[in-house]
Length: 148
Image (cartoon, rainbow, N blue to C red; front, top):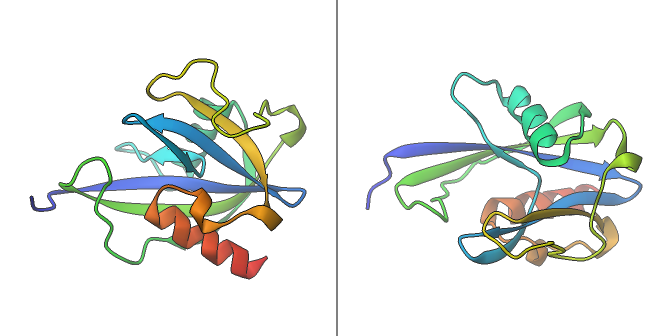
């Protein structure tokens, strides 16, 4: 199958007290760990997308956004082989990290259903690229670990 569409994704590297916020989800029946964020909508700016995603997923406001990484290699979508994925990552801070409701363990879902999602703080000193499901996230985490 040939590539016919771009899928642009925007993610946040939310850091706080030596930890990074990660998302655990069930996607197409698989348990995956990824960074918080999601798809850019038509007519939406990239930074607006990241603000919207954090509000939709976490009911959290972010600030101090700084561009961290943009995909610089070809990546076919894990979900639709006709799509090329381009990801934009920003480092950011949560305005009120202490009020964020997070899980204490991986895949801490109330119900195991498609698109179930939970968030947790992962210590940077125990973070590895193997914690993440998607190839671009792995590149970003490797870059983050080299810089911290």
